Length: 197
Ligand code: 5GP
Image 1: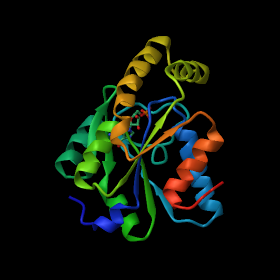
Image 2: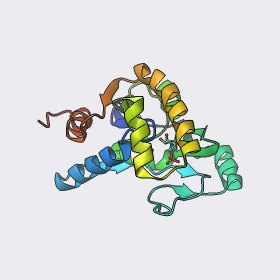
Image 3: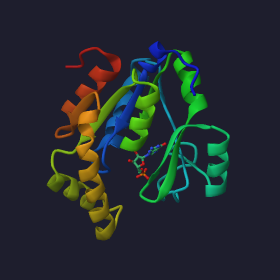
């Protein structure tokens, strides 16, 4: 259990979206914005047992660890939450989150809906944000166009997305990523609680 006070949890932003909804680009833009405006934002880096993709860096995108280490960490209460997503283990390390909140940072978590629900049970004050693609048809197009997955995996991801989107009403904020510009403005308004156009 995290030691942090309820007030601090208000600066914890849980961002969930089906793959292909555009959350990675949105989050990258939030980090850029924070840098240029000198705002204190920390992006949590999860642990996973998934194999790294060719573009991914250990310690930046994820900490890539094996199942044995992951199980050891679960036992050691390293994680604020952990879940199996698409057959791999993912976990949110607790200590960096706690430390960054205490140091006055806004902390962003990019995790799936199961993890989001888990954290909200412990910290109902945390801010939960669900990002949806404009439609399933558009999601299919985006997953296809980015060329990372086979058609079989795309179908699997779309089925997963449909299920995830049913959970969106459980989130405090919903953003539809139709236009990147509008979605980004909405996200910045939520995180920094000021109007950004
Ligand atoms: P990917 O493997 O495509 O990067 O991520 C697959 C899914 O796992 C995404 O929905 C992502 O948000 C989720 N995910 C990433 N890290 C965590 C985590 O620490 N906990 C949970 N519950 N989900 C995570």
